[in-house]
Length: 637
Image (cartoon, rainbow, N blue to C red; front, side, top):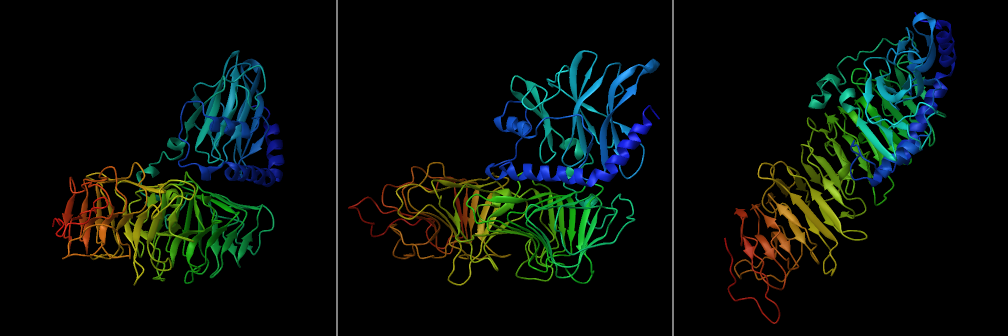
């Protein structure tokens, strides 16, 4: 044991009595950063990069000055502090950084063994409590910035750090450094107003969790967690900030539980939460549950035979669920319910990272009123959904204008392995929207979600619908309510919608009807109204099982034998060129391409194929006035 053991013990005693206050303070700061970061305005999460970026600079500035005061991690597991020590021949040394397990055990030195006159300038603990970054100066040499796990281990020295050995660190000066709010990267000043950032993911997930294999973190795989000694703990209300520790598990929710606005409920890694039948946890404040790959947090049934309701995140609430397993919920429609505020740009209250939702009696996750996932959500697993509710068989149901937030993940093993997308208050895509390839089809509309319409029609200008290669969209129709995809506004002289569906030969994009075996005419097809925007793309796509008549009449010239004015692809204004390329129209119940405009000819036959089209592959458009349709217009079949 090195010198000043008594000092460590005093710090230990002090922090043991204050750790909950400090931890909750840190969590509240994290909450403020998450809520104030403006994530909903970003189309993609920030990438780690070595360049000056105004947003990254403001991120550093928002954190305040790093300091050398003792700290406790957000989970209350470790105290980190600086202690002066003695070097060889009892020469005083400038201090070393130590981590003390608050549950018991010996301190661990985080700073590397160093020479005379070293000193730790300042340090930070990452919001998730896993990392410590510290700046150190040694013998007049340039200071270093190092990163180490909070429980100890090899340190990682970061290049380009511009700390100063002769002055404390402060915001805006050379030497600033801070973790991102999601603990995924560390940024630091290199001097002269530039910033470097480094990703931490390869360190956090070095155990191959990124392979897509989730078997090692299922809700049935035992965690590497100590046996609780203080539980069970009953909960019927949360009136102020609370911390649910692993040792007090199981935490049993005995009634509907509300986390009020401005209140934080933090759940420790390894904690187990059990919810009694028919009850939910409604979050209008903040729920933070940070597990680890081998110390996951579980929410499950208290009664094995009866489901609990949900975690309901309701505006202005937010939830951050990291390595959390939810099982046996869904009695109220979904295991996780996220409610937004109908704003045009999605609010994003749910951070899901390695979250697993298992065995929901209904939907796995339901997001409505235009609520979405936080941008850097990922590796979401939803399986076993729709176990007893045939009207809610999907892993995820979400709103148009929020689909772009759906994270990477696994969405199979449910009653219906499709992402259900519905229009709320209308079917319009009013701002740019992206359908990512997440490995399962998207069903547009369906049970409890109206019929399947997408109308790409910008609210304050041009809106673009982007569809990734490999995506499959299935449009739901019911009775006279015919599903379809519509781009633009009828008669509009200004383009309000655009579609960019860029498939590949290996990963084409499929547009088809709903159901396991759609038939010809199960939906209307793709229709372009009004002025056409530049940049429409339908490349390597298949438009299948379309052709139903939704009531739109155009000015084309169908032959007398086939007077129907419908088709799998309908275009009402003359395009500058054919934007359907390398594609297939199959099983149309009427025409293939209905050119419904008045004007010159633009041929859509080249490079495209037609399979089982009932009428014309391509209908002749009406010639410019005063021209009229020929008596026997061409009708290639």
